[in-house]
Length: 464
Image (cartoon, rainbow, N blue to C red; front, top):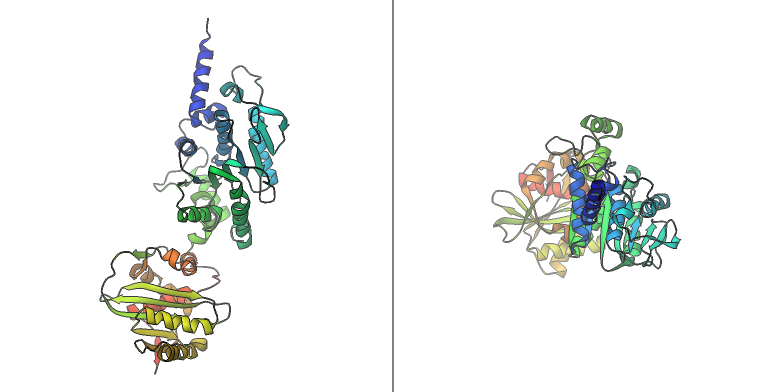
C-alpha cells in the first residue's frame, strides 16, 4: 500500500522542481513562510528572470531579509534543473565567497538522515557533485565541467566561463561607500574581470544594499540602460510608504527606529530604505525637464562663474528666459581646463547659442576673462551680437545657493537628456549636500546666478 506521506512528499518535490519559492520553502520552511509575501515576490522575480530573455537583474533589499540566502538557493535550483549551467558568484572577500560556495556545495552533497526532512537529492535525485572535483571554490557536477566558481575582487576567474553571473554585496560599510577609489576598483573588477567571463547569452544578477548612487548597483544600472540591455530592478524598503514594515517578523518598526538612532538616519536609509547616502541629504531633491519644442524666449542669456583656483571648475550656462521669467537651460560648459582654453570655448558657446546678454563674475580674475571673451568674439569670431558685462558678487556664496535652491527646483528647466549632455555638471548638481562638506560648488554657484537673474533678487553690481 502506498504511504500517503510519501505521496505528499513526492508532490512537494515535484512542485519544488517547478517553482523556486516552493524549493526555498521545502529547504527552509521556518524562514520561507507562505505568509511572507516579500519572499514570494523575490523568489518569483528570480525565477521569472532566469527563465526570461532579460539580461541584467539588480536586487536591492535590506540586511537580514534573505537576499544572499535566496541567491544561494537559486544557484542550487538552477543547477538542479539544468546541469549545463555554469555559475560564477562574486562576494566582498574570499572568506564570504568561500562560505557562499560551501553552503551550495554542501546542500547538493547532503545525505538523507531523516526520512521526514527533504534534502536536495529528494528534489533533484540525478544531480551530484563530481567525485574528485569538489573543491571549496570551484567544483563540477557529474556530467558537467566547472559548473561553479566563487570569487571576489581579490580572487581569480581565469579560465572560467559563466552563463549566470551573481554579484553579492560588495560594499561592507559607509566608509567604503564614501571611498571613491574602492568603488572604482569594484567597477573595474566587474567590467574587466567578471564581464569578460560572461558567455554569449549569459545573465547577470547584482544583489546589493544601496550605499551610494555610484556604487556597483548604481553604475551597472546606468551602464546597461545606456547600452540598451534588458534590465529588471527590484528595490525593497524595510519601511514601506504606507507606514508598514516589509516583514515585521524579520524587522519590526521598533527595531528599525532603534537602528536609526544607533546608525544615524543617512546610514539607516541606505541600509534599509535603498536611499544612497550621497542622495539622502542632497540640496536639490528634484529637477524639472523639457522636451520637444521650446517656448518663446524674451531673451537668451548666459551666466559664467570662472574658476577661482586650478582645482575649481569654470561653469558657463546658456539659458532662455520666458516672458514669465522661467529659465530653460540650453547649453553648459563645465570644465577644469585652463583659461586659455575656456575663454575661446565660452566665446564660441555664446556665438553658437545666439546669446543676447552674458554676465560674468569678475571676482578672482573674472574681469580679465570677460574682456578676453569679448575680444575673441569681436576680433576672432567677428561678432558683436552678445553684450558682455562683468560684475562683482557681493553676497555670501553658500547663503545664495541655499536660499535660491527652491527657485532652482521650481523654475529652471533642463533638457530631458541633460544627464548625458553634461554628465559632470549633472553629477555635481544631483549630489550636492545640504549639510557637510562639498568638494565643489561651481555648478551650484552658476545655477544660482541663473536663478537670481531671472527672479531679480540679485545682489550684484554691474561694472561699466
